[in-house]
Amino acid sequence: MTDTCQVDFYVLASPGQKAGHLACRLAIMAWEQGHRIIVLAENANGARQLDELMWEHPAGRFLPHSADVMDQSAAVRIGLADNEIPADCEVVINLTTMPVPRPERFKRLLEIVPGNDSERTASRHKFRTYREQGLKPASHTIGK
Image (cartoon, rainbow, N blue to C red; front, side, top):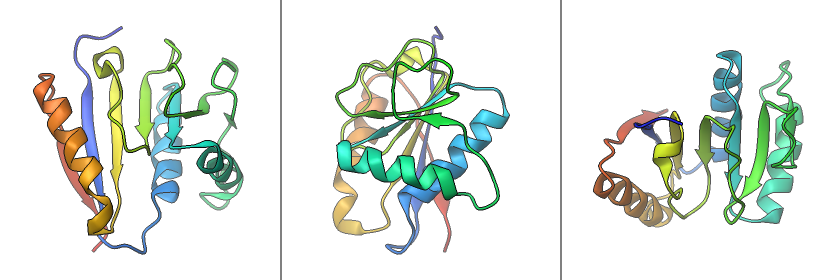
């Protein structure tokens, strides 16, 4: 358990960029640093798509993962927005429209902001929510 959580918003610069691809890249970087990760999908269909994507992206890399949030043998787990996040996860990659409850439990919280302006409203809400909880979210633009 940690008393501060580093929150980073990764803003996709264009609508053509894929949030799932960035989630895979961020997950592999966190895994290589020895962290236990959960990637939260909005629904079961999104979780299935992430599971498939993690087998092939990034190309030439292996990302050990499980679609079972309780599978402690997997460094990367895929969960749903309404799943309880296991206590052993250190890094949360949130692809859902909802803020992560009690983010202070984690070392890192990574939010991916869609490239489409009409889909960014939820991300703005999450940014404000985390700030109101005393966290200091940082923002990073990905791509041009």
